[in-house]
Image 1 (cartoon, rainbow, N blue to C red):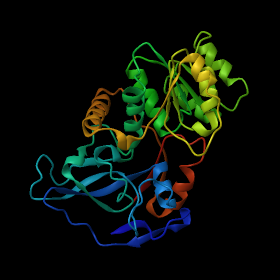
Image 2 (cartoon, rainbow, N blue to C red):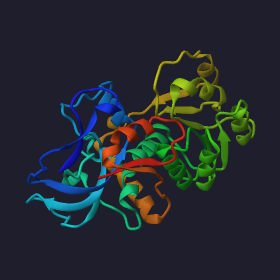
Image 3 (cartoon, rainbow, N blue to C red):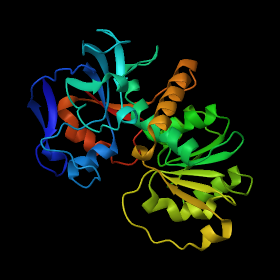
Length: 324
């Protein structure tokens, strides 16, 4: 089969399209013919060698895939050849193997794709929606009637968070840095959309909160925005840091005065029970029609290097997907 591999750590240029042996299922495994593979920022960190998880080399990156079942282990029940399925990081915390024509996964980490959801859309469930759900509810304690500000809301995690928050009865303020991004947010029916490239956008957030501040902030780029989050958060507000790409110097004074909680999130810290509950709720939301995944760039498998460049650029709208 064809697969993207890196044989050494480095920039996007280390990704290469190779011919590798087809995987064979063990007794409890499923082989999926990959129709779409999701691209996540974590894939780029792993490729560069800067991630906490250091894979063996050569490595096939990618933790999210959707496709058709083409082989089953002898112990597998509940699935059959030809089933449309997906597997993602939230199901087994496996970050590798999906940038390929075929991927092997334990059957317990494979789920049917809900009706009306495409292969590309299904690649959003295992990281984007799972991360948004974990950030909102398990870490953020979001409750109906509260206000959440999603600081950088036009990407895949951001749009996932908008949909899940609206379903849960929260007032949603979202930010983007372009007119296209703002149009996307309005299309997602946010209560207020603000341009975080404008000088007075924090005032717009406060106005949307009737002069107060959000109960909860989901932060996608903490090294740039955390100080601003602390400034606009409401009294006893919670700030959940989802993304960060550098260091920042802040004064704790605002956190003291407002008694703020600043919380980190890393999906692999969720328990197996939490992850199972998260995926069940996401699939229930999809079945209800309450969520509709947003897919952005769809690139051929051989353009994985370009996908790795795109996924780190600001202003991405929706999930970036590779098509084998």
